[in-house]
Length: 204
Image 1 (cartoon, rainbow, N blue to C red):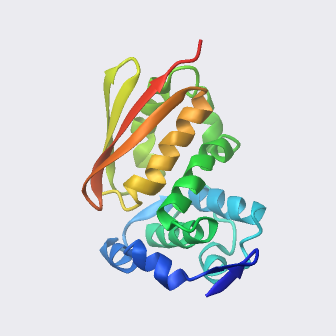
Image 2: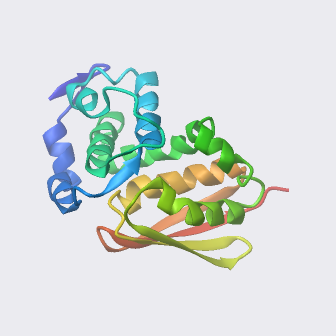
């Protein structure tokens, strides 16, 4: 158990709900993610004054080189622990953290390159994300299917983050950053493969 702002969090129970142990075991040691995404989570947790938690300090104790590659296992574990701390439902906690990430991401050197694609139409942002996926991590694949002017599907393959929690939240955050109202639904084929169905309405 750990105490955070007077709320007791049972991390073993929370991570069991996420099947974290089996997920980490399925991630190959060769899977890596850019350091900028470690730093985004680290900075968010620092703002929330949560970096003193031992497990988070172990995984996110120092800033990484933004362009460097670091073990995806560590980032997946860190998000699982952080999600369990910020919300009683750890999956919703990760969704909450990822929803906020596009705003912080836009302030990074990589995010500034992304900013010009953010408004006003999410289709350009989605196309940029698809093109840049290989730069973000050295594993997995995303394919964006544009179905209409206000509807797209992101197909995800060998994705080690929670599609129905973390990545759903990230997509919701992208819509907010684009200045549109929308909805994101997750559909899973298995824990590591599935899709996000994204619909939005442009504001007048």
